[in-house]
Length: 87
Image (cartoon, rainbow, N blue to C red; front, side, top):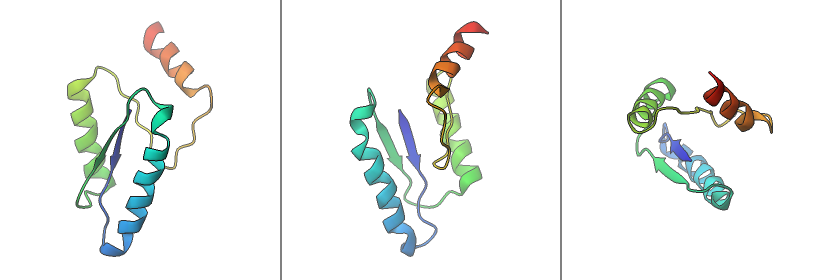
């Protein structure tokens, strides 16, 4: 899994960014591999997402994009695998 954390909009948000990274690292054992990339500056949702998706598509044929506030069903990954291999 690759996780991208956008940088803070201002210094008062740094603790929020730290908290997100901490949560990811606490769940590290839930994944075969976890790669966390943290931006030093705020790229904004649109620009940051475009940059990171482009980077991932240069490495992988398929990607699944989830935002931090998405809560997928427990069947989500099974469904995505079904779609991937049955199209």
